[in-house]
Structures are given as C-alpha cells and as structure tokens.
Image 1 (tube, rainbow, N blue to C red):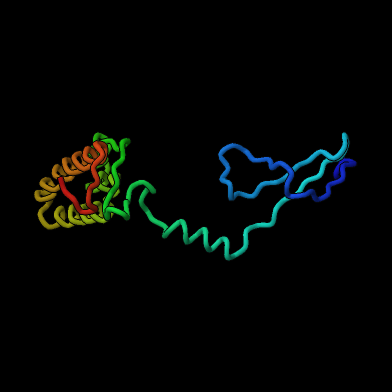
Image 2 (cartoon, helix red, strand yellow):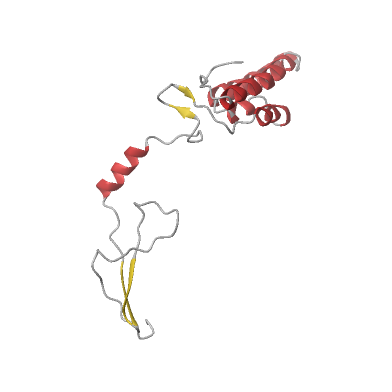
Length: 159
C-alpha cells in the first residue's frame, strides 16, 4: 500500500511540481503535504483528442530535414551559423557523392547526385564519375559556407 499515507485530490490552485525544461503543456502533478504524515496528490486529465489534433496541426507536417534547415517563408534552406563547410565536403569525400548536400539540407539534390554518380560509374567505367565527385565536394563546401555566413540558399542552388 501507501505505507500508512492517504492520497486524496487537492484543488487546482496548489503549486505544481515540474522538472526543469518541461514544456508548459506537459502533464504535471500537484503534491501537497496535508499533515506531517499525510500527502495528497492530483494528476490532471490527459489532453482531449481535439487538443491533441490542434497541437499536431500547429506543429506542421513532419519532415526529414532538421527543423532549422527548411525555411518555408523564403522557400529554401535557412542560414545556420553552425554549418561546417569542412564537414560537408568531408562527407562527400569519405561517404558517397551527395552526402554533403544531404548535410546542407539539400535532400533531393543529394539523392540526385548519388543516383547520377552510380549511373555514370556504370556507363563510363567511372571516368565521368570522377568529374561529378570533385564538383559535389566543392558545391557542398560553398553551400555550407553561404549558410554559415547568414545567407539563404535554394534547395537546388549550386556553388
């Protein structure tokens, strides 16, 4: 049981206990000491279906991009002071062609570069892919540099 403690509901005006960083819409509980050996607690009801739908609609559609990357107001990729040109270029060097573009938030462009490089490797025994690979590295570096310097870039913007 409760070890001799009685739990009963309390009014909603009692102080609420929240851990740091918890959003105001999170469920919380009220814990109040009634006497030296009694505590009372209340837990609010979960949000209604209508409240859950409203919160989901306010959040917008799900996306594969990081939340900072796509800027719907400008129709492109938002600036990011933490974007690393070295990381973007390095991903194209050690991973696959197009990985740096994925890092920069240019998802469709990165996937297209990857598919094009596979096709070019098969069609030309790798000779044409040697042209696209360095261009993808330079493009990833320059796009990340633009984002780091506070510029918006298009989802298909090059260099």
